[in-house]
Amino acid sequence: MKIFPLGEGSYSVDASKKFIPFNPQVDNFRDRPGSLFIHVNPFLIQTSTDLILFDAGLGYKNTAGDLHLHQNIRNAGFDPEDVTLVLMSHLHYDHSGGLVVERNGKFEPSFPAAEHVIQRGEWETAYSGRSSSYHTDIFDVLQRSAQLTFVEGSGQFRSGISYELSGGHCQYHHVYHVEDAGEKCFFGGDELPEPEQLIRRFKAKYDYDPQKAMDLREVYGKKAAAENWTCLFYHAKSSPVGTIAYNGDHFTITPVV
Image (cartoon, rainbow, N blue to C red; front, top):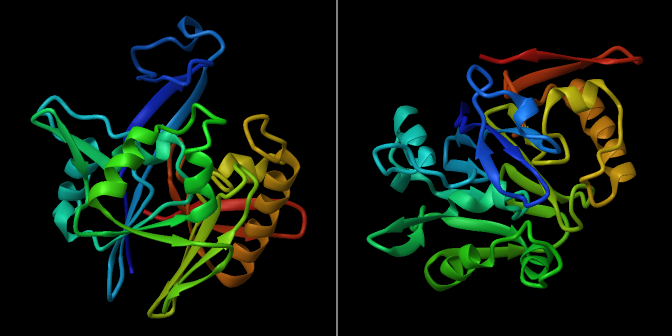
């Protein structure tokens, strides 16, 4: 199993839920009062049978007009067309924006050859209109032109890939376990988004169920330590891939380079 973080940089987001690029070397966080600062790291995983994308970033383009996501995949040594599976933890915009790309004034799926795996309840919630965190124009494109597979609850998608309905960050959020040739990888989406949230136990007000999300982080951390999972941290500021140790009192994370 090979893991490739596809870092898209840092952003500020305020009550308008607009994501604005933030470069800490030249930008001052005091100029963006009331903003939450996040880091975006989709992941590419190569197994013996698949090339898997975990979540799709914001869908922003570089100065050459290419998706950052596509260029990052090329930088990892692959073509975007090589991706066989797109496994979505949930559909908030900072995780789903890169699912589509605009070319010549028309939007199309970014990974037309890939199977997209989405929790059915999350898809239905996106269309309910209850939250502006979802951009349904993205999902309209997928519905017309992409290969969609809806799952429900928890289960095994195929040999070596399982999903678990978690429901902490949003009601139908789910997490993934991948096992290949004895190696174990865990993608927690926004249930385990960064090492700091595991080390510092706290409730995040942006979670659907803050108590449940906080408790789940501890559950996942203990299992990761006991079973030697490699964990993928989607919103990590640095070191988005790591292993976890737990001594019965606190967690420590060791970066995997």
